[in-house]
Image (tube, rainbow, N blue to C red; front, side, top):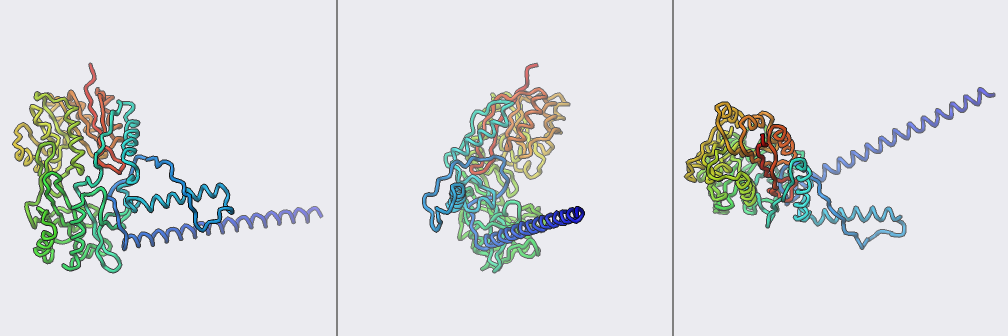
Length: 486
């Protein structure tokens, strides 16, 4: 009898365990089903956006700063909801979710979350500046106090460089925009609160001309089609406009008539360049270029100097704030007219040429051949004779100077977002300039590089921020470093 009871208990336990296993399997299947349904829904939404969507935003880049969105307004009216049947907890949850919907619906940029270019378009500008100062100050707190982050009086439509990728919807209608963040789905663009208004209009005109000229947009999957991208560069001071048509083949049908029609719609365009990119690559511009109208470049004025801007030239995208940024860099350098200066990562020579008026001698160093060519022409254009440009690695150039026993008073360094590498920083230390002016576009890598320089004989004297990219997480910082007393 006891054995029978024990056997029965074992059978009952097995049955309970089997039931639990079955329930677990069903739960997993249900979760997977829900996940697949959500994935399908997201894909459908993406396709709808490709066909019909509009964007008021701009491209690129993930955000490293977090903004506090503050308290959302409580919703007072509820329709078709039985309030008595909800608990207080559910009521709070409902209000919170509805607030999110209202915020997204009333956003100045309905697709900012997709393109990732203006995450903080709905955050008050003053609050953006406060948060950028707080985050940057925290990163630099071990080195110095961040005095201020200089903002813009009118922080919209500041971008002087606008790039659009072209595609088509299911019906073959041409679309232009930017890639959705982290994907190659195109978010259609008609206008952007960050981009130059006229540049957006020019891109819209080109998009509208394609059908009448029977020009097919490029298809990444099949490799068929002609037009891949359109790049518009603007001289904010000069009023000049450059249009770069990025195509998969140098053969552009009805090229002359296309140019005439575009110029008729936009007589402000001063040059048009055909750029051939026939490679399967994520890079926008190809190697080959053909000027089909104008000089092939534009000019713009910055800090009293005139600069030539080619399709591939690096030129700061916010000219208003660039004047503030470079003005601070020159101020920090403390030039008296007796100094020898190095402009590392000099690009087309902007900082070096602006500093030349207050220095005895300036040496600009840049590895990019085209940029150095533009820099030399910019020096001639501005009749500046105390500047020399070298197409070399800046680190190797400074090591060579140090080995020759040369003395340099000030080094300007304006590295890319990744910051400087140890080889370059060690060359600065070896050259031993009296002062280093570090212009940074990434506070995180700036803090890393300051730590290295601090361990090797330099101290940070002061730092100020400049908001070059309103409505994004990015901020520029100017730091002055000097040699520690021996």
